[in-house]
Length: 330
Image (tube, rainbow, N blue to C red; front, side, top):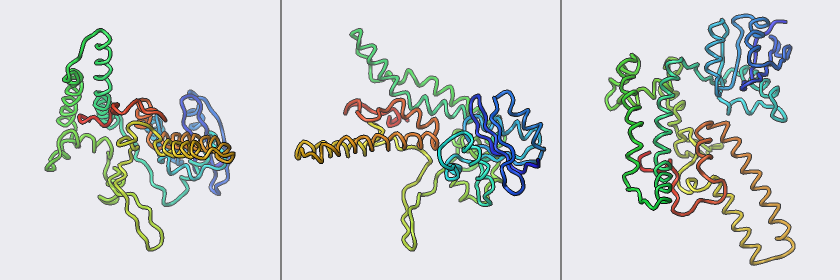
C-alpha cells in the first residue's frame, strides 16, 4: 500500500483519515481517536507524503507536529473544500473532499503559522473582543446599577479601557522584540498595532507571488459577480460577516421582511391559498436562515459565533438597542 495523499477531517476527539494511491484510488480510510491518529500516520504513511487538512481550529498545531515528523502539510480554507463534498456531510466525506481538493493544481493553500504568530494573533483577538464587548458590558453594568436605584454615568465605559491599554502596551512590546514586526514598522504610517497584525496574519511573505495576492489574502480586494462581457465589481469583501446597519439588530432581516409582507397579504386577502402558503413559506425561510448560519460558521468561525451570541435571530431587542460591534469605540 503506497500512499501519495492523505486527507484528514479534524475534530476534538475523533479524526477521520482518507488516503489514496498514485492513481487516486482510496486505499486507506480510518476513523481514529485523538491519542492514536498521529501514531497511525507514522506507522502507515511514509515521511514526505502530502497530508491535507482544513484550516480550522487546531489545524496549525497539528500541521506543525506533522511537519516535525517529515510530512508535507497542506492547509486548505474550508470554503475551497466544500465544493468537493459528495452527497451528505459526514466525517468520511469531508476527509475525502480534503484529499480531492489537494489534487487540484490551482488550489490555494494556507501557510502554517508558527507558535509566535499565533501568540501575536491571540493578543489581537482578545483586544478586538474586549473592544467589541465594551458597550455591552457598560450597558449591563448600567442596568444592574439601576436595579439598586443608581444611575451610572455615561463615562462608565472608561472603566473597561484599562485592559485594552494593557494589551496595547503588550503589542508595543512585541514590536520592540520581534524583528519582523520592527521591520514592518519602518514603513511610513504603520505602527506596532498594524505591523504586528500583518506579521501574525501573513507570516512569511514569500508564499505570495505579488502584492495583489497579499491583498486577496487580507480580504482587501473587491468582490465580483461577472459573466461574459458584463463585469460587476462589488464592495471590499474584508472576509467578515455583515454586522452593521440592520444586521446589528437581527441576524436575518431579509427573511423577517419577507415574512412581514406575507403576513400583511394574509390579513388583507385571507384566502385558502394564502392560509396554506403562509406557513409553508415561513418554514422555507426558517430553513434557509439555518442553512446560511451553518455556512457563515464554516466561513467566519469565531467572528460569527460572537455576532450570533449577542444578536437575536428574528426579533430585535428594540429600536434603542445597539450592537457592540457598532459602538464608536470599536
